[in-house]
Length: 100
Image 1 (cartoon, rainbow, N blue to C red):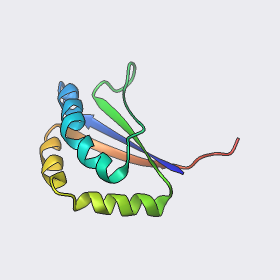
Image 2 (image 1 turned 30 degrees about the vertical axis):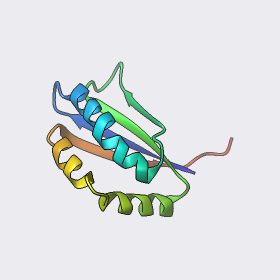
Image 3 (image 1 turned 180 degrees about the vertical axis):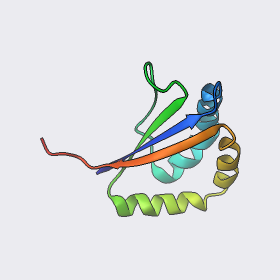
């Protein structure tokens, strides 16, 4: 299993609007393709205009296949275009598990 960490830095004062848009419009599209989101976070300390989302995949190939399907899912491109007006930047990291 791998975990994708996605951080969205929103425009000042737009974090709540981005979260609501993601919850009501983005996640229903994403979860139909990518499976249930692991978690969505904001920071108590640190960047105040940032939303972090965690997604689980079986492998890098699984992620690539799901992301490719998402790109062609009806309504996704329109959602991204509208949500991007609230976002300054975003960063993606893939995390591999460590055996303990």
